[in-house]
Amino acid sequence: MSIVLQLSQVKRNKLERPKECPHCQGATFQRWGEQTRRVKDSQIRTVKVFRYRCSTCRRTFRHYPDGISHAQQTERMKQLAVICWSFGLSYRKLEAILSAFGVSLSRMSGWRDVQAGAEGIRRRKQWKPARVVGVDGAWVNGQGVMVAVDLGDGQPLEIGAVDEKNMRAVTRWLKRLKQQHNIGAIVTDDLAMYRTLSEKLELGHQVCHFHLRRWVGRACWDLGNRLSEDWLWILDRIKVIMEDLPPDGGQLLLDLYKQLPGHLKIGQERTPLDELRHLLIRLSENWERYTTFFHDPGLPWTNNRTEQAIGRMKMRARTVRGYKTEQGMLNGLLVSSVNLT
Image 1 (cartoon, rainbow, N blue to C red):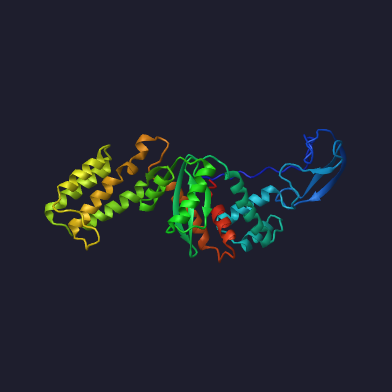
Image 2 (cartoon, helix red, strand yellow; image 1 turned 180 degrees about the vertical axis):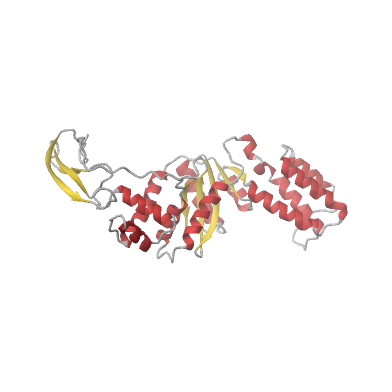
């Protein structure tokens, strides 16, 4: 598989005149000189920058070629620095690699490029509508973070320094995201907290089937080793229902529960039969959240894209010696979680 990364084009000069004054939006200018500037780039060493004077406000301004700004680095080199860091290079190795192309870039400049890259992602995503969002928590370098991914394009919306165990903090964080991005539904794992959150914030909710089938499979395997043979057929029925996902699956599971002797015990030590009752009730009560994707074609049935973003984030975090500030950590995690392919 080949991966193609598109970098910004850089031109030596700007032949087109500016369309408006950046200070007053005036449309009439006089050329007020030119300058040849040295830039840090792998292909271009110098560019020509023209200066103009606005006939309306009498102020001057520079008109830069494509891919050039007031910074000495070109936009292409800034993007390349961010990409190399995202792929696992340290700032020291980044400095060494770019020097092979004749570009002298300090480690501090590379760090600033990564921080600026994260801020650029935030600006682009700040008010971006995202109807369906994957939400999950992660533990990185000893700190809990929450990750929100737009499941439409698979790119992260936000990474927040919020512990998934702190329901109040997660509620505030998700409420702000809902208002900012007009979120209509979330895809999460099967934590009970997300059921409460989706009801409180009036969000559609789909439970990720990867998580669901994994924990149900483990529960059935464990109960199969401890239950009486008289009840093993119920485990087989649960497996068939989870595989077929019938519309009335919740009722079928409830009917199975009613065939068990006794009642569900709360606050007491559970027997294997009690655990089977609890499993059936849990699956029955949450059946609508397991099958929401049937009623909404735009809703995925797994949270794989969020898991992939977290995976990229954790892989990069393992090679970072340490983040000195919380904001620096969040910026680094955001940049590394972006899918560059």
